[in-house]
Image (cartoon, rainbow, N blue to C red; front, top):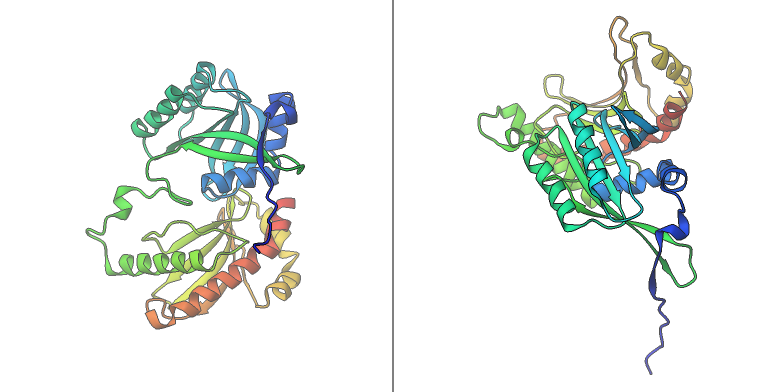
Length: 320
């Protein structure tokens, strides 16, 4: 006799049952680190660092102003707890006109067909410095469980991939040097390795021809950089500290030197770079990264030490 299986039903929950007011209830809920991470995951973006709520953009106020910690570019979020309307579309156009490079995310309970088409049109006519998303927010529950949010992306930039949209000039192999092709092949294979062995600590960017790959660490002006150096035959996991001409951030992290090296398990190269706006903390591995037979070992090394860097440095950086 077949065993009886009891299954619960998924039911929809009215948004107003959880958030009575958009500005005082929904926006503060969304602006928490946990919920911004949910939104970023749904969009396939890096971590979003909230800078302000109800931020002025010209005569308007953006509900949430963020920075994409992987690119340091502005992200503006507009919220609605009902279906989309022309007023919010007008605000989105105003934001785009007043800023040089920006990602705009319009969140609503329901998108009308004309407003979804408007987001698609904006993505077609603007250059790659602008990204427009339409996201529907819903609430569901299973049986008597608490309500859970669902973000449904119904409009996004053409060709949007997991972390980065790659321009047509980047994807073309024409006129590429052997070194560029080697780097692209390495990053492509590394991304495939990470897709098969995903990390809970970080996401990779899309492969490129560059000698670096940036990993978001949750705050602008800080990144983990994975570096390829064919001349010195080494790869590097690097904590990159930007916009730090007075070295306050570097010196604050340097106070954790012994603790960092014990946690990560290796001696690190602490490069203050006096006179420059940047500083770095580096870990090197000597190798020939173009040698296909050893790449699996290198991918494992990059993943392991990137996770160790993120685990140790991320909570400290957020407190600086």
